[in-house]
Amino acid sequence: MNDTQERALPVLFTEKEHCCGCSACYAVCPKHAIVMKTDEEGFLYPDVIPEKCIRCYQCIHVCIFKADQKKKGFLN
Figure (cartoon, helix red, strand yellow):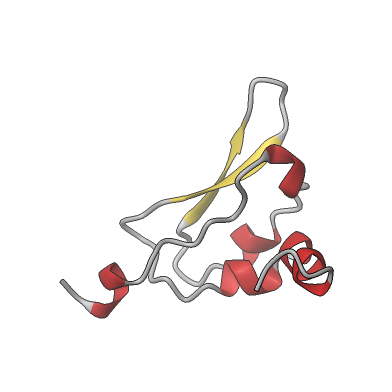
């Protein structure tokens, strides 16, 4: 197992309310490991492709929702 596989996959959101579908994570991914999928209501949400993901977490760092939650003390 290599270093990439040992690190956890980034969790972009756990509930749809924690994602606005802006696609910043999709745009910043250097390996194109994120696809935007349409839900049953027609909204786009990111989905990580594990085989392509190098676990650089750039998607997490660019996420405005995660930054806001961290600022408010909800995330470490």
